[in-house]
Amino acid sequence: MASIKNRNGSYLITVSLGRDTEGKKLFQTTTYKPTATTPKAIEKEVQRFAQEFESRVKAGKYLSGDKVSFADFVSIWDTDWASTHLTIAVRENYNANIRRHALPELGNMKIAKIHPVQVQSYINKLYQSGLSPATVKYSYACLNSVFGYAYRMKVIDENPCERVELPKQKKSDALHFFDDRQARIFLNALESSFPIIHKSHTRTLTSSGEKYLVMDYVENRRISTQFQCFFNLAVYGGFRREEILALTWADIDFTNQTVSITKACSMTKTAGLIIKETKTQSGVRTIRLPERCFAKLAQWKKEELQLALALGTKWEGQRGSNFEKQFIFIQTDSGKMMNISTPAHKFH
Image 1 (tube, helix red, strand yellow):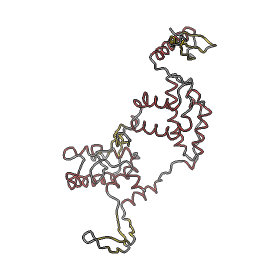
Image 2 (cartoon, helix red, strand yellow):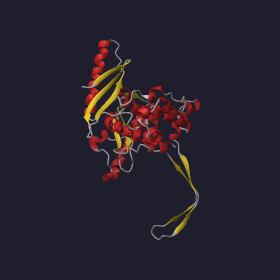
Image 3 (tube, rainbow, N blue to C red):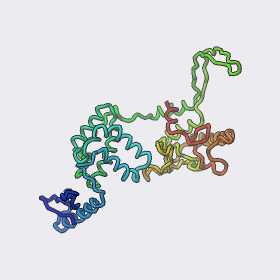
Image 4 (cartoon, one colour):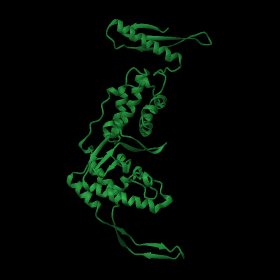
């Protein structure tokens, strides 16, 4: 049985672990401050904690925040909590952020010795390094996840992140977005041709290897139907890039002119491009969009079907009766879902 001593409302819990090879007594201690208010409830709460503490110690699962470093606990957090509570992509991003920012500053410190003032200093340093408030807030969320788990597991007595204040966002840091006029200009520009100027250069004939000079010339190009569809959905639907890329033809209701958002894609290092549920239940929604969006979608669906036939065996997407399950936005040389970085490149 663990021994319990009252120290002015805070209880010292001691668990005996026998003796070492030299006969010296071994024990593990911790302190606990109950939240109950009545003597009987306090007694029950402390007894329950003491039993749980003794079980963890004797099972070899107890960790002392005075002995384990922040870096070591991050590994424990990743294996015991992040692996089952976070998606693959979020887990990878959290770990990458912690490795890049938190470990160089806090990694070697014992986790119980990291106080709010040190976490505040760390957050301030991130902001002063030129990172945006949004990025600093994300780094804070990663750190808070680790400390929050350490607190719940009684490795530390307090989560130091709870006392930290994040930098206030300046007006200059606010998101920039199109107003109505700019949105109309952008959407109209998608349907206009634009010049590509080719400077004079030398080419080589494949047949003979002979070189010849090509003079300056201008080539008129147009944005493909596929990307016209993508950006119209982005503007009119307000959909996230990851939601648009995960759309299949089954999500498009041409009769009622609605688009259903039920999933999103995500890029991971371990599993590549994956499809997952939306972040929250409220993210599942059906949106009615203007006629112009469905006219373009209908044209692109026709073009995509033709592309599937033209590619033949190189087409890796859905065919025939399964075409409704086909991704709308694709890599045009294979029919696979479009790469997550492609829309940004095309936008620029």
